[in-house]
Amino acid sequence: MATLLRIYLVRGLIAIAWAAGFSAVNDSLTATSVILLIIYPLIDVVASLLDAREDPGTRARKLQIFNTTLSALAALALGLAAISGIGAVLFTFGVWAIVSGIAQFTVAIRRRSPELGRQWPMLIAGAFSVIAGATYLPAALGDDPSISILILYTAAGGVFFVLQAAGLAWRQRRAVQA
Image (cartoon, rainbow, N blue to C red; front, side, top):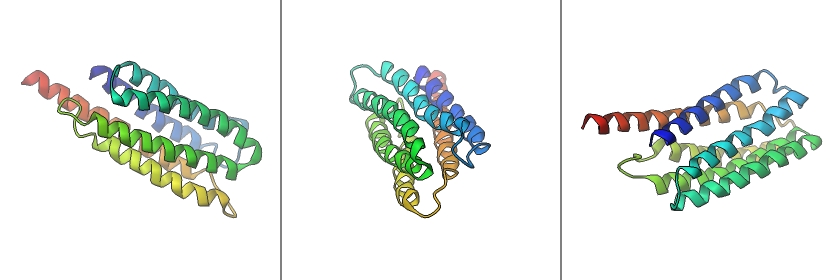
């Protein structure tokens, strides 16, 4: 549980920092903003790999491996989509958010246990990802798509990971005191 706590905490803090950095460069698709867009799913790749390593032989592990592959493909797809413009980037990010959100929600359901808690922050984050991703698709096809809406999505996702880490820390402290 301690390793999972660290993974969630670091993943969350990095997502919040990414959102802060991206807020400074999201006006257009510059080299910096495209690099950040590619990096975001790669953060998920690393976190999912570390998480899968800590979860051998469970049903959740297969979804973590799937999410690792999905996020690596999303990083590549975002780089390619940037060639076509903001709408293509937003659409690609939306598809990734939907599919990875479903995977995250399912992992959270499978991890609900006395040791790991009810997984509410991860369940909410997964559902939020699906809903946000679904709103990005029509926005991407609209007259004036904007990638600034990704800032709230990534910051909120980071907060949910930090909350899950806090919940695990609280459970760990309670278990030691018992």
